[in-house]
Image 1: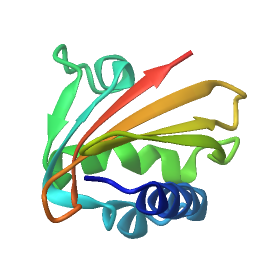
Image 2: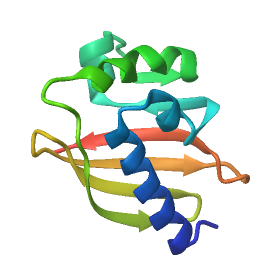
Image 3: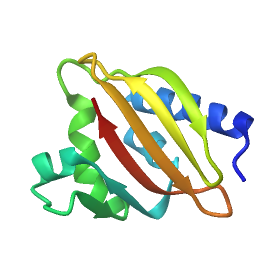
Amino acid sequence: MITTEFARAYAQDWIEAWNSHDLERIFSHYADDFEMSSPLIVERMKEPSGTLRGKAAIRPYFQPAMTAQPPLHFELLGVLTGVNSITILYRNQAGRSVAEVIAFNDRQQAVKGSAHYE
């Protein structure tokens, strides 16, 4: 079970990693074979399922955010704790609210992420 303390620490470090624009630091939060789902995957990657699997497939999706203008910046709004998942609530540099649901395996490695946008 995910503890509130783990969820808060993970969310804070996750936000800081994204704000650092360091892709390897961001990837350190995920297992090698993690799965990411997002409506932006459909839009930007032209993947109709909206899902990418594994760091090699996700790297080209995350990479453009590292050099985006205006610079990517996330503001942590809150974190919700589930049994084996957390939801990170944040606002991006465009002022858009986002909820990112992250599921963990029994070793507390992130294995699945799903982004939800306002």
